[in-house]
Image 1: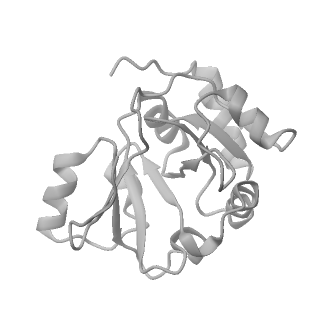
Image 2 (image 1 turned 180 degrees about the vertical axis):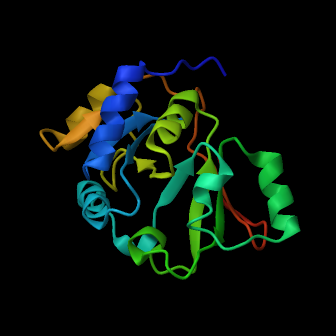
Image 3 (image 1 turned 90 degrees about the vertical axis):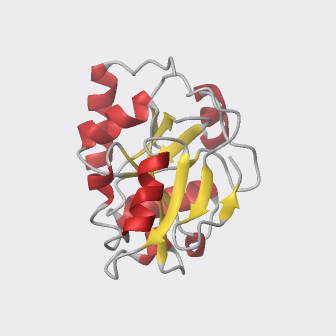
Length: 190
């Protein structure tokens, strides 16, 4: 992957927005994502409102390392851990058993949570600078195609307070594959 990382000052600015409860739009492997601090209920609600997405569906978290996901997932079997090690970092999102204390605004009505250790350099740098996982959902209202550039993000969300982190996408044609960690079943093709 030849994707470059956004300038350090842009990453620092995005991290300040995240820590203040704001929403950012940022490039991922295939599309622009909307992100926020996953433990900030108000920020998550702002994303759900922007997307017109019901909370019951749950959201994806991305991280730069599996350790950043540990607060959200239950201890894993050696079989599931082996599957993760084969696909991470990379464009595979796994549905893994959520810790009981994970808020329903993240996992929706499920007992699992969708998580990914990304291989997109800009997203990895963002998570590293933030010091943890962030929400990652496509930057689009629920019925429209995902944004693939900052101009489309702005056209979708107008004057909404969304900070756009400019940078290249990772070059994938489709959003990440989603697999169920317990069954291995393919939920969404990538």
